[in-house]
Image (cartoon, rainbow, N blue to C red):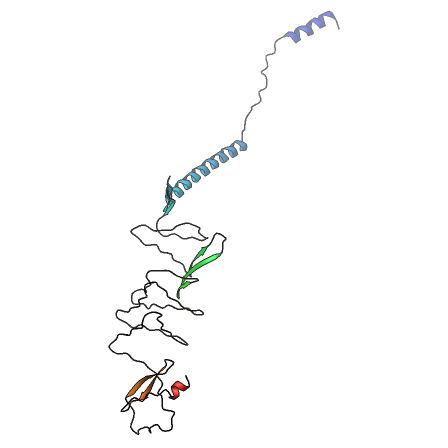
Length: 259
């Protein structure tokens, strides 16, 4: 290369370039940008819907700083007003209603109340169903009554029924009858006092009619006997004897002999 050629080549390399540098854009463009805006808008709509649902639930359930709905948390415990439904067992120390209203427990089948000791053993049970109230053990109450125009029935299907009181037991029916029935024997016993029957008329039905077992007894009259004498055997059994001029009660009556 000649000197002139070298100088010419060097001058061409030192000349300033007039061309603009190529710029590369940085960011999200096209369909990616539209998808991003769509997801941001969807997230914003979801947040608004969730906020609206939360406000609606708080309004419907009546959430306050004291509780929720009819449930109020007080210093003495929990206060529940209105009708409530429990699907699982409820363990509480005390349940009582307001002073001016009654406490109602309602179930489609039976309402069972159990009492247990500190070891978890069942000590008492009360079951209220369609046939009445069933008590597992003894019951202590100052008053038992039926609803108006309804009958009151005390029954023990397989065991005995015992009523005890230190001062007395009073059974009264203001406008109706009192009926006591049993399968075998009905005992009225007073250890220190007496049994007093006070009524305008006292009727003893289905009493057996006795007759003298002695062959010297008078023959029965052909007329129908309408008057009888009430007799008592030595063992206390009552029977009827045809009335006569004198007493016809004899200890040798067939009723006393076979009783």
